[in-house]
Length: 183
Image 1 (cartoon, helix red, strand yellow):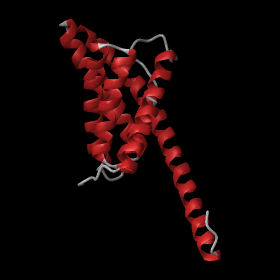
Image 2 (image 1 turned 90 degrees about the vertical axis):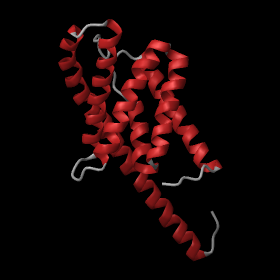
Image 3 (image 1 turned 90 degrees about the horizontal axis):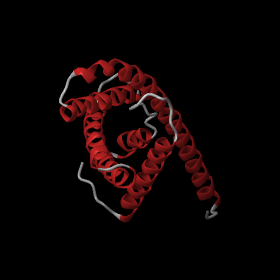
């Protein structure tokens, strides 16, 4: 899609970036479990929003902005490497999965979470120079299925709420337009 980057699109992308960073920071502060590498993935709801309700280029840019800014604020080069690998593979899988007929947003989210963990484990194998850490992968994949489902459900219900809100706004505009009132 040939996208025109107008002020509204830039503002929306800036707001989504901020929301993703805040959600990422919240997860950083909130230890979900005592198991390293397991997070809720709440910022993924923002990527799902961009992927489903805006467009693929915006989702890609949002992922890179989130990884870069979060890495500078809360991590470092090592954290950025893991996040970038996970983010790139996860988003690529979600983009492809979204095109599959019959796969819901929850399924897309689960596939994104699983692929995120797979990418991070591949990077870890290179960093620590051993494949022995792959023994930890089944635990991460089960956690990814659970957290991906949760994130997908949050996204689904958020989207339903947004659609209902937009429908009510459109009805209100039609009513106001018929009576000649201005909002």
